[in-house]
Image (cartoon, rainbow, N blue to C red):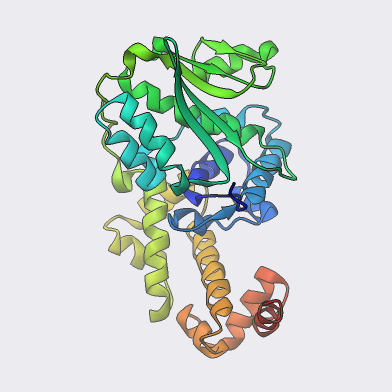
Length: 324
């Protein structure tokens, strides 16, 4: 059993737009949970599972929505989930898509159990988190089930697909039908997506083409990557970034805002994340780190780092190496 419990940050991509749609500041909620928005675009990175669950707990406190995980999960396209999603949607049949989802799960989750099996005429994708957490996982279970349901829906036979919930949601079943359809079972032994075995060997109907930079999430991803590259070369302005992305400043502002964060918030977050990463390596002086983050003076970097963490960068670095 894995002793590491973490999620690929791409599994959190659609949280910011959801919060924005509820007139809640994504920056405030992400800060409370200790999750860096710019880190969501690092497909090779990992976010500790407790932080992911804490994020959904903070969201539920603010929005009062009991089924936000289902709504967020429904907004995911499988291809939003990087290599895992592309491999699943690239399978030839629904059976192969399910098998690929299971064998490739380590690309998305560490410490999660996903199984595919058949029982008579029913095919089952069973999902569970291993180990324990200090925070309630229910919203992430709902979101994960919504994503897994999309695998069965690749056959384009929605009436053949149902969902089993370990939690007793009977009183609010109609709320969940918006995401999972009418075939729902509550108080079951496991959380599962179930579907008719008759669709297992049907061909996968490919997902619609991605929207590229027209998609706010894709725009934010491109911006985060570009900002990291530009920082060592001086001040990074929205005008310069918009030009390199071949869009107007106004369009870039609008798309970022639709995702949930302003240009200034994203730039600040990228700098924060890069500062922490560089200090942790211990390979650069404070002056070099400041320069690589685009600050003209080390004092400006020090003030920014104090605002981010409450301590000076030199003290932060000393604490890191003292604990190693």
